[in-house]
Image (cartoon, rainbow, N blue to C red; front, side):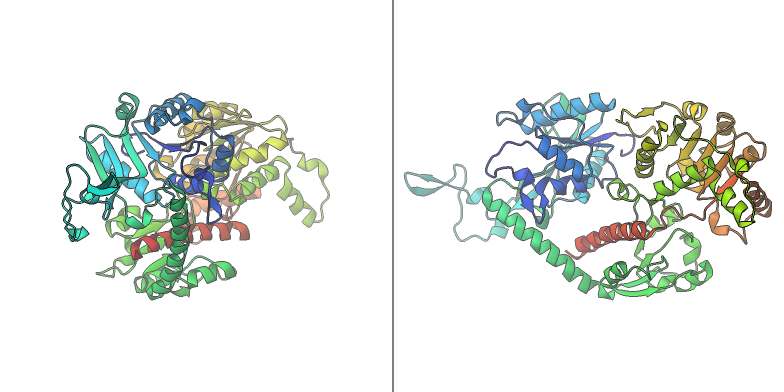
Amino acid sequence: MIGNKKILVNILARAGSTGIKDKNIADLEGKPVLWYSVTEALKSKYADDICFSTDSQKYADLAKEAGLHVPFLRDPKYAKKNSTAADASRWTALKYEKYSGKKYDYIVDFMNSNPFKIVDDLDACIEILHKNKKADTVVAVNRVWDGHPDRIKQILKGEIQDWPGTNEKLESLRQDLKPPAYIRSGSVYAMKRHVLIDKINRRGKISLPYILPDERVCNLDEPKDLFTARAMMKKRKLNIKDIFIKSKKLKILVTSKINDLDQILDNINSLGEVKVINNISRANLKKVINNYDVLLCSTNIKIDKGLFKNFKKLKIKYIITPSVGIDHLDLKFLNKNKIKIFSLKKSHNDTKKIFSPAELTFMHILNISRNFFPSIQSVRKLKWEPNKFIGFELNNKIIGIIGMGAVGSILAKFCKPFGLKIISYDPNKIINDPDITQVNSLVNLLNNSDIISVNVSGDEDNNNLLSENEFKQMKKNAILINTSRGNVINIKALINNLKNNKIAAAGIDVINNENLFPNKYPKILKKELITLQKQNKLFITPHIGGSTIEARIKRLKFVLESFKRELSIENN
């Protein structure tokens, strides 16, 4: 979404063949051509939904492997040569609107025929369309040089002749040809809904250009184009390696623990001069931060204006944080100072491969349901009291999952083998799983859940998502799990409802203002938390949802790849 405008991105991939048989799945450096469009579209910060439109189950399965849900196949009649791309896109948009229950304001065709376009091109077209209120379409184009219209020829009776209406000066320089000529790159068409749906066209009355960089243009149509694409992809990979060498001038400070990850250390050392300082305090970070171009940080220290107040000019250009939550970053300050941020926010395609947070969530559920930790403590004290730790079965209990992003979706998969009945609340997503009942209100979920798991972002919109009013809606014997962010649950309301036995227990991996714990944490709150833990009503883990070797490697790898792509763009 941009502003209040909903956006659908269509990726069209018919199985029919033109100049290249099965060009959409032709091998390109070990991946099918369609892979590049799907994985780039999934990174868009504006796309509400992405629809892969194909008449081929094989193509659909490959798109799913790349990380995209494919709810239906395209009507075969829209895959024939006599059907235009606008026909196919219009059918796809209407079908997806019916499927999703949404009506989109902007529809964007992100074409498979150019595998070199990137998410920046997609989002730039959306921004241009939204910014220019009179425009109704934006089309990606690229400059034509030797193919300029003035140089186009025809062959009549075996002779080369000028094209009608043109008159080439034979020895003219191509740079002198006026006006400059452009051609659609076959990459991106951004349209206001009425242009496609009512006019069945991908160009409206006022169509604006987005000029695609030459190094990102290769329109696959003929066999020779595929040879070109393969050469370009190899060159792109070589360029990235060259950029690592060029980037040695970057000074990089790492405060996120990476010493034990040789693969990541090698990766980041290739980018510049690296200094790793584990467990750095905010006071010490304040002294050294302006000596570096790049900061790779964890979530435990707030990166805000206060860190830089002693410096007139800021040296830092990039902040890298291997986390989905970015509430530890002062976005207003960083954006104002043009400091670029690289995180896993909106990187569902990457984070859906990280299982650790959902595993920890389920561990909290098992611990509370079977009194696991208290029973171990009892035996450690040389007691043997099996009747003191009677728990309950998960089978046939109802779990309510708030937020069905990567963690919520993985958690739901874990719940199914245990016989848990799953309901979910997520106003930003349509859930298409016959084993999950999507409810239309948070109150509905709270009223009906035996177990409540919170799996949302720490954005300001989610501050105090569960407060006193929400606790009143919960079952008396409910258990509450929060492995997302501390600010989403009002900690005073949590304490009061546990103290007064309004809910049975809670397992949390996060607390509000956890960076202050324990020494600077409010004394009254700290005392209450300690008491509830001793009573085995509250179980707190110290924000370890992503603290596995596998999760750390995946998170760091994903975010560093994003950073490298940015360096590649800047250096080209």
